[in-house]
Amino acid sequence: MTDASPTPTERGLRERKKILTRQTIATAAFELAEANGLEDVTISQIADRAFVSPRTVSNYFHSKEAAIVAADDNEPVTMLMGFDERPTDEAPLLSLRTVLAETVRGWSKEQLERLRAKEQLVDRSPSLLPHRMAQYDELEDAIRIAVAQRTGADPETDAFSRMMAGAASAAVKTAIRVWVNTEADPEDLSALVERAFDDLESGLSPEH
Amino acid sequence: MTDASPTPTERGLRERKKILTRQTIATAAFELAEANGLEDVTISQIADRAFVSPRTVSNYFHSKEAAIVAADDNEPVTMLMGFDERPTDEAPLLSLRTVLAETVRGWSKEQLERLRAKEQLVDRSPSLLPHRMAQYDELEDAIRIAVAQRTGADPETDAFSRMMAGAASAAVKTAIRVWVNTEADPEDLSALVERAFDDLESGLSPEH
DNA sequence: ACGGCAATTGCGCGACCCGCAACGTTGCGA
DNA sequence: TCGCAACGTTGCGGGTCGCGCAATTGCCGT
Image 1 (cartoon, rainbow over the protein chains, first blue to last red):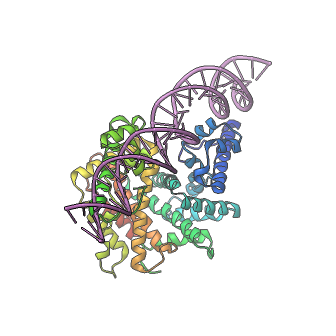
Image 2 (cartoon, chains in turn green, red, blue, brown):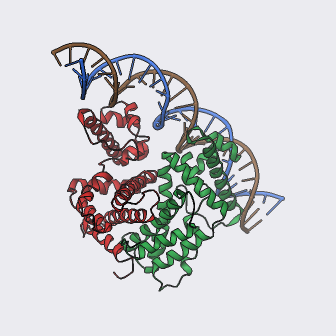
Image 3 (cartoon, each protein chain N blue to C red):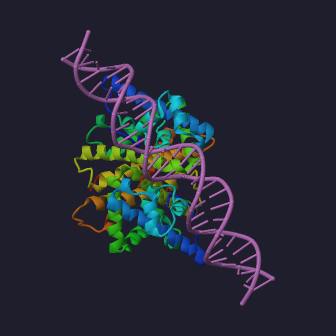
C-alpha cells in the first residue's frame, strides 16, 4: 500500500476491478524492475505491461518505487484476519503470534518465492528501502489499532499497544529477513516467526 | 541519513565542512517545509537558503523528502555511543536501555522541540513517512550490528540480534510517538523510553 | 434502458534526478 | 613554502516524473 485509501471491503465490480488494476500495475512494475534493474524502468514501460496509460499508473502510485514494492501485496489487513476471532481474554501477544504464524503458514510456494525475490530486490536497490519500511509500518499500525481496540485503550496515546505492535511487526520482519538471508532455508518461515515471538515472550533475555 | 555513506569520523577540515553543509541543507529544507508545506518547497529554495547551488542539494540527498527528514540528525551512531563501553557480560537489552535512555535524556529543549516539530510535520505530509521509517531502520541496523558484535553472532543471519534490534528501536519509536501525541507532556521522553523497555523486559504481558 | 458517477486517458507544465565536464579549494608531501 | 593531486561545488542538458485539468469511457443502480 503506502498509497491510497483504506482497502475497500470490495463491494461491487467496480472496486474489484480497481484492486485488480492496482495489482496488475504493481506486478508489472516489480517484474520489470527485477529484470532490468530499478533505474532502467520507466513509468511508460510499466504502463504498457499493465495495459493502462502512464497517467493511470501515477493515479495509483506516487512513484514507481511505491508500485514495485506493492507487488504481491501481503496486506496488513489480510495478515491480521482472524485476530478479532481470538478469545478476548487471551494475551494479545499470544493472539498475534497465533494469527501471524498462521497467516504466514498459509502462504504458497509461489508467494514465498516472490517475497524472497522482492526482499532481495530491495537489498539491491536502496531507494526502495524507505517504501518497504513504510509497508512494515503499515502492518504495525494495523496491529496497534487491533490491540488497542481489544484492550479498550486509545490507540494514539497508549504506550503498551504501540510497543506491542512495534515488537510484533519486528518479529515478522525479523523472521522474513533471516529467512531471506538463510541460503539453505533450513527452517520454515512460520517457524521463524514463532521463534521470534519466543524471544519476545522471554523478555529478550539471552538464553538461546 | 537514508542517503550517502557511513558517517566519516570527521578527519580534516574537508570532512567537517561536508557534514556542516549537509546539516545546513537539511535544516533549510526542514524549515521551509514547516513554513510552507511540503508541496510548496522546491530544491531551488532549499539551495538558496543553504547558500549552495541546487545541484549540490541533489548531491547530498536523493530527494527533498530525504533532506527534510535528515534535519537535526539524531544519528543512530550517535545514539549508540557508549554501548561498547558497557560491560560485556551485561544483558544486551539492559545495555541498550541504559544507553538509549541516557542519550535521550541528554537532548536539549531545542532538540526536543525540533524533534516534536519534525514528527508532526511527517504526520501532516504522508510522503515523508517512508523516509522517516528508513531512519528508524537505520537505527535498527546500528543496534543489530552492535549487538551481534558483542554476542559474536553473524549479524546477517542471527535471529536474536535482529529481534533485539527491532524491539529496541521500536521502543524508541514508541516513546517518541507517545510523547508527541501527548499534548500535556506529563512525562519526560527518557522516562517513556524506560517504560517501553519495561514492557519488553516483562515479555509484553499485560500487567501494567 | 438510461442517467449519473467513477475510472481512465491525453495534454501540458513545472519540478526533479543525474551524468558530465569545468572550476575552485584543500590538504599533503617534497 | 610550494605545487600538485584529490575532492567538493557548480552549471548545463536531457530524460523522467508528478499532477492538475478536462474530456471520454464504460459500469452500476434504480
